[in-house]
Image (cartoon, rainbow, N blue to C red; front, side, top):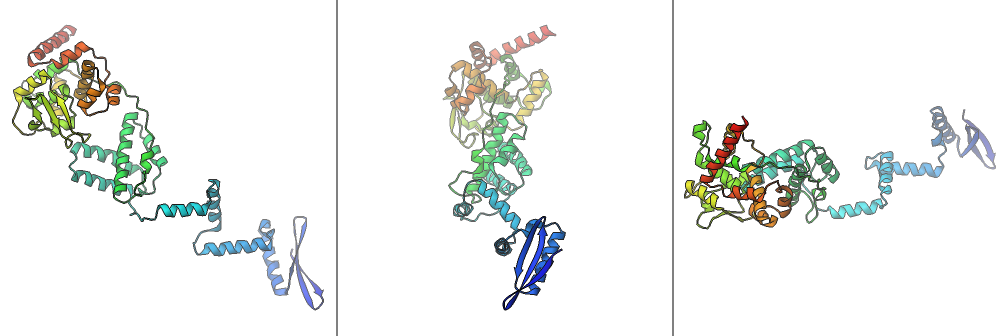
Length: 406
């Protein structure tokens, strides 16, 4: 119940709206009856809905509330949302207006709104136009395609924490996760170079933490296994592939340490038998840096037999043919087995990680961390002296062992 009392004060009459909030009696003085009635109806309506807190507002509070609503109306922002956002910003300990002005000063340039998937497509086209290898492009498509499928946002709004969480959720080894990280960093630097991110500032991908690389045991070939592969005749084994091309593939990978992709890009003109070196140009190297690889005596012997003046040395199919031959001899083919074998035997031979790193186009840390297999100096000597004649002898030894075991 809300009551209205009238009280004469000299020449004018007061109207007093009276009601109870709990045990507390509230009195509000209004000048005319119409206003008093309107106020009484408002109070009665609030009381009937249990909105007692709103009735405790002072006139100054009510005025502030109405003014706040008026200011927010042009922005179409609810009062509660505005207050919540302000409180969250205040918790950070930075004045909200100062933070907003700083943000505007740092983002004066307008960026094209590009989704991650759009930037990935542009990145792929650019790398293809730059002449990157099909294997590199396939690796980019696989890794960045997965990133674009999983993270649906614009490249300018994604946060470091989001990318870091995505990397951890891949379920990959530390080394593989770091490969994904490097690819994402390349993508964001591409976006910055093309004006989709602020110039002269680190990208959010630059702050991504490195995963701990536990290394892991790498697989290598035994001396007698490489010998067996070198003397194998694909025609006799009824396997596809040309023997000369396959032998060259084994030699460049196992006795020279070249990457699979580098072998596929090699031309016979890159091999200088007179100087006993292989020249790998920046365009053909994974690291985009020139390097020279020495040829051991046995490598020269094998390559001299099948040498050509010019032309591509190997196709991408040689890897499959080589594995098919290995299966015929029950030889397990480790991942990157030829290159890993070279690194392991070469490190045992020269005992210098920097030297091996220079030859393989790697870092000394990578060499020391991955190629310290259980290989003796004598094993290394046998490996790099695996001439055609010695290869036949080692293959015979392996076959004798297999027969004895059978």
